[in-house]
Length: 573
Image 1 (cartoon, one colour):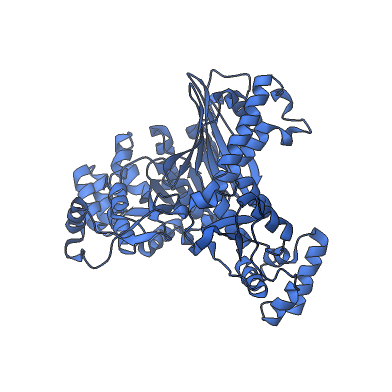
Image 2 (cartoon, helix red, strand yellow; image 1 turned 30 degrees about the vertical axis):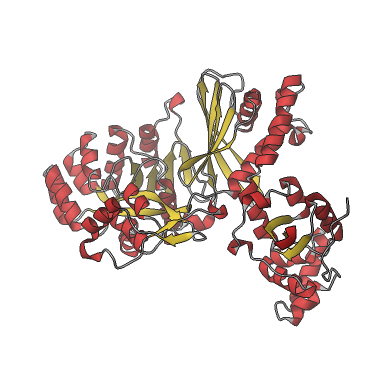
């Protein structure tokens, strides 16, 4: 078989630093700084320049392409066909930093390369693909993101799962030694879990579900609130995977009949993950659910959460008060804890004593006194909360108002000079004070202790890469018209058509929508009179512009979410 002819291009090496200086992208001083890093770390000059934030990957890629007479391709703007991309196996794509990005007339393939001057890699790609290869230059970060997005490490995970199944079948896997063995990092179960976590970080997964079934071990990810199957390997590996996770979480590996909860921390690339783990005995073995918490400092600020300015202004005013209770309500997984910790970040100063009582402690912030509830030793919310009041706090965060006793102690603290933050499971903000009454609290405590309630939901946002105009369906037009009255038609509704960047879901990422009720004098009077219908009616009248529905509709008007999503999150409104 004749070897495919390679196209002609200038593969000669050039002095990257000099070219960047000539184009005024860096200075001589910055080049010397990068060269010093290159010498100390052994990295390529381009990587050193990017790590120092002197240039971007795209700028280097454009310079390389220009010097070699090739095209620079922005992968974020290129629609990639997964079938074409997968003509090159994932392992080879990662090894050669290459991606098949398109078909050309005559059967040739366009391949994006981080370093087209690597002729060894170029020749190997030509042999693997069995056709003429037309190189293009791509940025390394964009290439790796595209590989993670399209391949989803499915080939790597499946291969590691098969390797682990073979070891389990042959009885050569010593689980008891994995925790301390010097070869632990090379064990198939460790490499399998590492690959799963890498994929989860790349796809912004919130939860990993490992579920043993009769004929397979189902591994699913929750992405943007929706469950997606990632892999279904041999069920024989379930025991090895669960036991390894238990070792990492310091759980009892001999106990398989009772649920257990734990946590561990690991680093995946530059990302530090706090992982909360819960095990549950099932018919076919132990199921595991892991909640992934990334310690992003930028997410811990109220100003970046997307809270509308009028609501944010009222929230900050409540946080500036020396006393009172602020409640954040919503279903599980609606971002309540993130909102509360963003509030704590603004309150966290050397002059303020802050104590948190949680089950479990989700985020760890320096300067706070954080207490983990432990029901097994009778260390309950109410018991810890009583002790906290003797610790002279200024601000107290209670993870959840679970019962009458906890809520009563929290409201008494709010009435006696403490700022109390907490969460409660209710459908909306207007019904929250009455929910506290239903728990058995006295009307005067609710009326005088409660200051502000924010309800929130998470709405999926449209993928910006495949966003297209969409004519609302008949029931959507009716819903829009009923709410917006004469405002319908002033904006264009959009939806996500589905593309490789959003895995054909049409959505990428989530945003919160918020609802507000502030205890005005009128509401305080109605709450103190225990007038539940009157309270709800007045709250909805006074804060009609700050409802979940209005927040969701604002995102529709901005083209950030679909009408269907707006209807879903505001269904309880």
